[in-house]
Length: 439
Image (cartoon, rainbow, N blue to C red; front, side):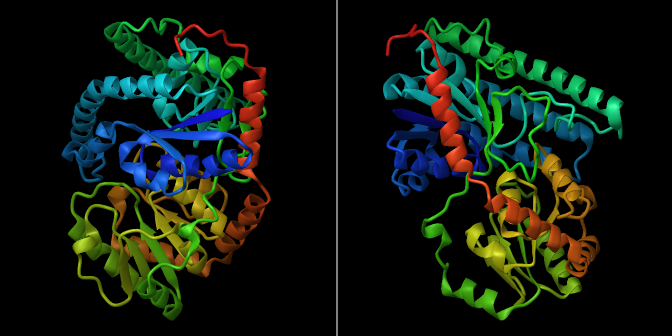
């Protein structure tokens, strides 16, 4: 069958789908990966068919307003103002993304669509054409549970029965607001396009809960146990790791020599996060590394730190394959993105997390509860002395490393890609959607 994988966002949103693609091909399926245009080379390098989506929404991360919204030193009012401005721009660009999703499905004519929630338009468009769909989640959302808080909910410290009730009720409230927002967006777009797509009854949350929309979660049960109060069609497959590629090959000699010649080596990287003052951040990192008496590899993708004159115990790289490097370091210091958390856990290495927004605080708390990371550091309180103390604490506390290695062993026993393929195949076999479109 022809499987269309559809995702949107940063590298962390795309790479798991690139990993899933070859697994499907090995089972005899044709695969098309639909993703932001900027990832064309990354996707085709892995011998996958590619259909582009607009880069416009991702480009908002380069907007100064986005940097202001994530600036830990900005006031609450300034952050809200920036978020409102970014949201207004994003809403205007959503129509372009929905146009691209429609065209990709109309032209690709897949037999099934596996979509990331950021491409939520795939649900009503696929149903219009009578195509089975599966939602693929990299984080736990869209299905309320009493087991843990939704990442957008304040933690009141409630426990036991009252805590579970609070988790479910607040989760349902957030999902209803989110669902109404998505429905309005699609309705407005469908009216403009006059494409006869019915968005009036669009309810992603209800679809997830009733089973009409199968949902697979690409993370490990060792990290987040599948809640017992989830419906049976919501599964946790295990992580989708990208293996057997040039990513695992040794990088340039300078990096390899640095790794081999330094002890107490740490990694510091903040993914796609913007930076308002890269020079000040670099000075803080250099001071913390010196005070902790360690060496560090810095991924400079964060905020333009590539132009900094670093001391000899720090090596700056633009990017580095996590699966090659992380097993060779003692600590992974990062922002708490789902992909970086997964890579650190898989390598059996403890983390120090400075979460900024979105799902990052959720993962930071989760890794702390697992005993593989100390309490997350709030960006507004981050300084050299605090970071140096955390580094020393993690190096001197063996339980962090032991816990991380224990979880890594469990992750190694999972086959997330095989489990996901089984669920996708099952969903197609059970689908009885009538074709209402014109494929």
